[in-house]
Amino acid sequence: MEHDVIDVRASAGTRIAVRFRDGASGEVDVARLVPFEGVFAPLCEPAFFARVAVHPETFTVMWPNGADIDSDVLYEVATGVTGSLPGAKRAD
Image 1: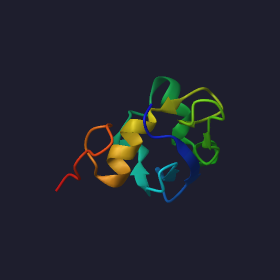
Image 2: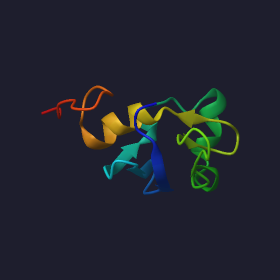
Image 3: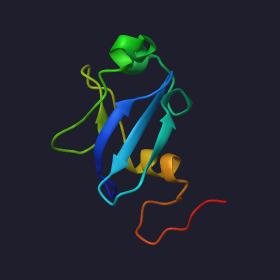
Image 4: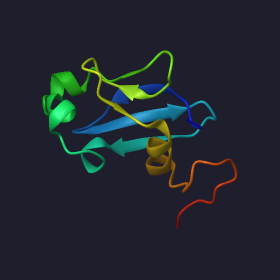
């Protein structure tokens, strides 16, 4: 993955605040990215959702049950920059 997450915290509702290694940051509504079913079903519970963390080896966003979200997808949603390559353009 191109965009390592270095910090994440649960925000309001189903949102997370993420910060990336390159200094970019933003908020992402997880419910708009994934259906809360299967491995993501426990995220419906606010106390479980709040246990979001950064995986120490892959630098992705993860939860204790193994649910995770690709950091490149998070970067695009949080920053509005489309594509995962350096120099990508900001979506307007």
